[in-house]
Length: 372
Ligand code: ADP
Ligand code: MG
Image (cartoon, rainbow, N blue to C red):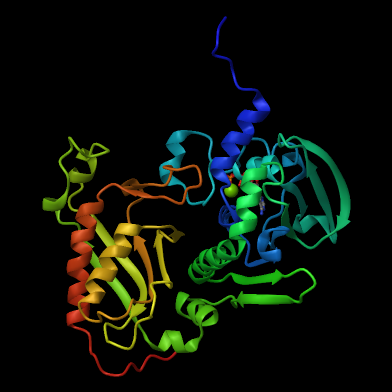
């Protein structure tokens, strides 16, 4: 008798969804990215019980058109990408069409949405676990979309238990992630709150629709933090001698090499390289690639290493956005899109360390005069 059988469709959906939505952070990340992709200028994130009971993201973006209700939560249905070739030129956060479909499989999920033309009325959308539209009803709503994720992992008992155990840590992690989105998103008002059962609702942080990242940082971390920062604006060409040979390279570099050395610009803010101006722990370090928040452990290590030679006892505050050609990295590495593969990482790291050393050497070590 044959032992190899196809996995039942519903189970495949659950297994795959569990790779996109791995924790409270991935829920918040996917929903906030959808709100930004929808052109929102105001985003409210509401947690109940640190996210254990519910996570809601409400935006004032475009809203969803009625003709999209049926397909919106179906797997691999997206308004943002239709062929693999489109990926390089993509300017939206989302492109896989997997987040909403995964949330249907792993939580009690609904959406309320209204477009500008819908007046004060909106539509509440309910879905099956498969992502199929189950029903709609008319409700009062403002323009935009509100996505509500209740009881995350209610149907995966082991994960749910784990989530319950780690929720406090998870909540701090999700706040750090939302800080990054709020700081990088100029012109967008963020508000994040948490309602503890039988406790009062607390606002975790809020930003105004500031025109620049410095004011966003001041809103999130306080004006005092800003005063201890220097502007980062590093521009360098990657040193081709550090570039791996094409044999080990994940991509064929010929087109890039024809175009000459690759230009990189890193803009942002960081602590002055002076003892007393850093932080006890490296907990305020945010990295972005073309404004997309991401984890870049090697880049973080390079920053910290250079900083340590000026201030060995503390870690710097870092807000660094790497502006780089969209062909020079790949976001499509992991289902949750948190990992970014920089194709020329070792060359970038060497050039970055040189540029940082130069910045710090030339830095005036007197008391900062920075004002907002
Ligand atoms: P992706 O973002 O990869 O396209 P998602 O599953 O996150 O996939 O979303 C599916 C589709 O639902 C999006 O392409 C978009 O058209 C629509 N959508 C999701 N969230 C919102 C929102 N907040 N406002 C408007 N449209 C949305
Ligand atoms: Mg998305």
